[in-house]
Length: 420
Image (cartoon, rainbow, N blue to C red; front, side, top):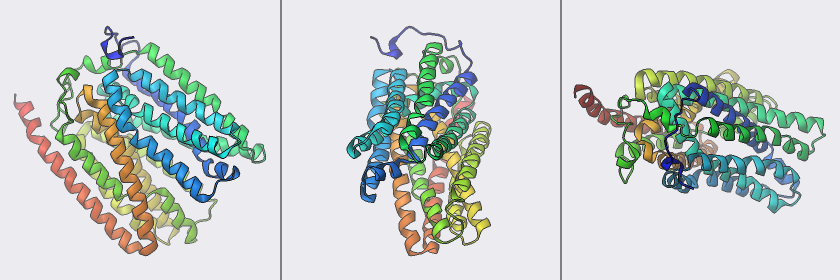
């Protein structure tokens, strides 16, 4: 069978770009119900099967590493094969099969393998999925398109753990029905992807019909055809990835924040999930707002990210309930920008023929930086909160400088394009 990119052009107009984005967002929402629901009880489940804290840490750590670092492989392979829908289907299929099987696992090594397999599914589909989505967002506006997708995604991130918690309560703590019930949204998600592929077999048709201007502030021509794409990703992409990596290294994880809230007696353990739910709402709202601002004002809106991230530890690690909760909500604002507008910008930095590769590399950079940031925040928190705040501010200042230099270098190209 010929690669998807080599097949005769099929109009993407069977479905509007906005409808495509919304339906893809519903897919992401259903998939989030599945894997976020499972991840909410992964630790207790493995412990129930005899795992120690070390084993739980190793298994989940390997899983997260696989979800991010394997994109270095899946991204380039997706670009070379041109089978964007095939990789998307394979990734979702692996996830929606692994999670229900996890509910039937009675041996620790089998359950551990399934936990890792679910994360591998994320690595397999993410570069291809983001590339497919980027074509439709060329019509709607990159920022708004990715933001709507992220907002729907967060609905699933909220619903999944709540669904699992409800089934656990009703079944007296039995993990099997709590995980088997996730087969329903999983099957729906996979069926929707199959349907979307039939409706819009070549989403690049959305973008191919447009004459797009260079990305605001970045000096990039997104209309460059795959055949003319350079052998290497453009330098602006690497500068941007450096900015994103720096800001993530200086970004505390919610795990460290929640640890502080409970161990310092700021909030009870029962109240932390309520704070997290509020954070997810703020995440979605921040994604929508900054996505709209990105489409109106370009990449300069990303200046907001290091500024907000720098404020998070100063607020979140306070002993005051109100201040600490405000810090957690600020964390949600930064997360919303990271999950939507950061991804949208990648599509404006890289030609169509290299986008899956770029998304794979970018995901790996973000993943490694986030892991380093979590370790750094946890380590410094145990030493000195003022030191943690100081280091975070310095890292975010460095990230801001890299972003400003990247934006400045992009402007001459934009000006030249406007004068031509």
